[in-house]
Image (cartoon, rainbow, N blue to C red; front, top):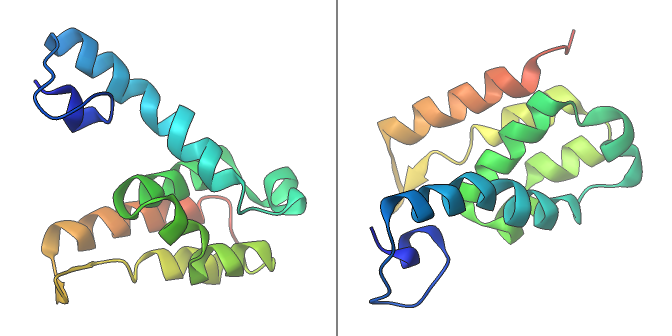
Length: 120
């Protein structure tokens, strides 16, 4: 497996699968979560960001990039206190090359369900 695949090296670098798996397991929480949290208000981090909702947003950031997720309508709505609308906006990220992709629809649907846990 290539270290480039998990964001830990240069093109052509190689490492054992075990090393790459370890990097991949820690990268979302270390890099993407920390980066994305810079876009959340203190109030969002303190009261609106349940572990499940956090996982849904970090999953989006992992897929579309920290800046894309951080500057998204989903994040703006969550920061404004409109949790359900922010969760709904996660589902808009279902296209690649301008076309809806079934796999992204499934992924965003799962993130939406996770995000909505505890919302009445």
